[in-house]
Each structure stands twice: as structure tokens, then as C-alpha cells.
Length: 383
Image (cartoon, rainbow, N blue to C red; front, top):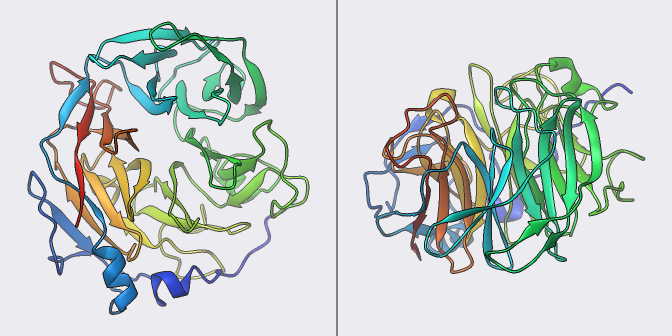
């Protein structure tokens, strides 16, 4: 099936303000700067004047307010962290291990995911937990990328994985562009971000799962209201999406690695075409959905993302920053901890309301410090 060009949808114009089409990415001082622990840089692209509703929403944005402290150290290329009944579970890309994290910072192996083929960017990647406490795992196997579900038994400190149930397999994999982030949306459906695995044209091919964001039931079925009949494809034209998050009103956001020009923050809508490989960043031609913000890859390489109290927090690898984007004005952003902790892979909200972010300096591309890799925790306050 060939891709059908889709016109840009109207993206929450009432909530976000009209005219979010961006033409450049410049650095300007913010109108009202947060007070981070370390110097923060703010980037902004041209946008219309803020409405009173936007100003009020932005006043409630979550902001880091304390010195980050390590809650875990000595990890090996950690990729994803989720919470199951309050217990943190961590995936390690290359070792294939699922770890649980004790309150004192010690780790224990819950289980080894069988058949993980860790080559380059592939390996044990995204995790998600459903309402029944089952663990969903996205990983690279010898026959491609796959999505599996595991029952979990025992109590914290003695958790164990059951036998794998494969929900999806045979997705083309490579040593790069495997995607890998999985997350449950507010609709109870499971979303899966999949890269193009270097097969550029697959992103526009609706018969391929590569270069897509998928939407499925918790059992791996096709929801009846998906945009393409009998297809898991929810959006297409992606290069390597790796961050998924939803605002309080249900707006879906995704981060995406560009090639040489622009990394992206996109608002995801059902059936939309995000342009790759015809376009990278904001389109100059064609009926593609444009990002609401873009960055040069050296400043970003955005991976995991979390929404907390009106703010999208994005972990950046090459940029080595934690980036905060206000949902009310997603064409702007503020950066924290520039280079202080190296490469950042994932970010999430802990049960106590603190922000956790994951370093990724042992992944073969970073410069590990003596305690790397780490999970760090920081307090948040509403501004």
C-alpha cells in the first residue's frame, strides 16, 4: 500500500494558539526565566503573542529546583525506567537485563530477556507496565525487533519475570534507527515508536511497520478506530522516534532524531504523515505535518520524554541537556545541566513527584565518569 499524502491537521489551535508553523530556530532570552540550579539556555522560534490562557498555563510549569542526586550508579547502558507498583524497573541495552532498584540504590536482576541481540543502537530498549502489572518489553532479537509481554511475580526485592508472550515480531532492525520507546496512552492503548532501520523508503510505506508510531490494544490487536483499516500504524513518515508523552488534555507528543539538519518535537495525530525521507524538520513543500519545534542534532538528539504539570521534559544525547518545553507554547524550550551529566537517555516522573533522568555515557558514544551510568533525581516546583 502506498502512502497517501495527508494535509496538516489543525493542532489544538484553541489550546496552543494559532500559527505554530516554525520558520527558524534562534536563541533568545525568555520573557520570564525559571531559576535552575545550573545555568539554563532558552531557545525560541517565532510564535504569536501569548494569550492570557497560555500565560496562565505557562505560570504553572514544572521547574527543577534542587541539585540532582544519584538514586542509582554503576549501570550499563540503561535505556528505559518505569515504575511497577512503586518499584523502579530499568532496562540495560547491551546486557539484556531488567533490574529493580531498591530504595538504598542497590540493583538486582529481575530477569534476562532471552535472545537479545545487542548491536549498535539495538538491544534491550523500551519498557512499559500495564494496569495489571505486566511488563512490556521492546528489544532487538536475531530476527529483528519485537514486542513481548512478561508476567511479573514476587514482591519488591524478589521480583521475577514469567515466560515471554510475543505480541509483535519480525520488525526490521539495524545497528541504528531502531526506535524502541513504548508507552500506554490515556486511552489505554499501547503506542510503539519504531525507527526506519536505515530503510528510508519504509517510512512512507504503509505496509511496513518501520518509520512509524504504532497503536495497539494491550494484547497486540488493532483498535477499531485506528486511522488505517486493519493496521497498527497510527502515524508515519518518521525517521527514528524515541520519546512519547501526553499532555493532560490528551495531546500526544513525540521526539524524533533527524539526520544532519533538524531533530524534531511533533504533535502526533492519527493518520498524519511527518515527511521523512522527503523532508527533515519543517517542510517547504508537500502536505506533511510540521514539527512544533526543531533543533540542530548537535544541540539535541532527543530520546526519552515525560510530561509533568504542563511541562515536557526531554532527555538529549548529543546535546547533553535536559530540555523543558511548556505545553502551552511548545515552540519554546529551556535547557538544564548543559554537559554536567553527559548523554541523557530517558526521563520520567517518580511516584513521589520528583523528576528522574537517566545518563547514557556507557553506550559506546559517551565519556563515562567514575559512577556512570546513573539515574538522577531532582525536585520540581511549579513556576
